[in-house]
Image (tube, rainbow, N blue to C red; front, top):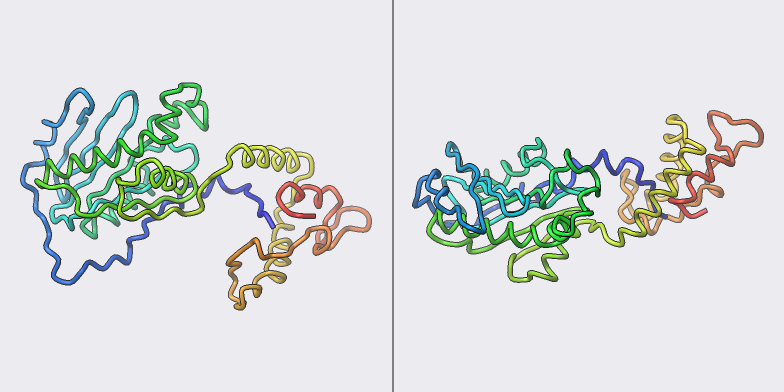
Length: 291
């Protein structure tokens, strides 16, 4: 069964949540203190890297610009655990580095002593929404792979400048688009990270986009009433919740859920009803579920 993805865009904020919230450092591990002031990081500006800001406080927050429009944030704690943590993007990326969910991810990692890196991948989603930036070949390459390597290497350089040494270990975590980024890093730049979490990588984008178009067209033609989504959900969980051996409100593997709308949902015999599905409503689910 393939589940409807109509809410995918609204769930972008939940992607790439830190997987280090339960981090437990090795006992007796030594921390590293800065060897320079935060403002000194401005000295790193050169032909390939521009330091836009370097602001101190409870941690040192550095923002960088790599041509043409790759924006990078590197956050450095007062007591460093000698590790780098970088997290990925959602959707078409281009997010503000100060988006609340990204700030929360950064702060979680900082609280565990990591140097934290993130990037907008080379474009501003407000100015160039969705995939409109891809008409620019350089921005497409930056989104696809270049910005990831540039961010990892820039963060390591900043850490070395600030603390006097490069990270002993580097980790990457990403989901959806961030999961695709994780696979790109593993394939193209295997030396950049010691550990990579690739969650739900968004691959085969041509097929994904075609399926999304078919789904949107079907919903526009025969929308599903909100009240009936509860009936749909209840039937899916009734049939598939216990497939994994535990009836706990979770469907661990949707691929094992043998749910077919025309077979498993109540069909209306005549006019539309509140507790049944019309032929049009059942057809709406065809782009996303087996019939």
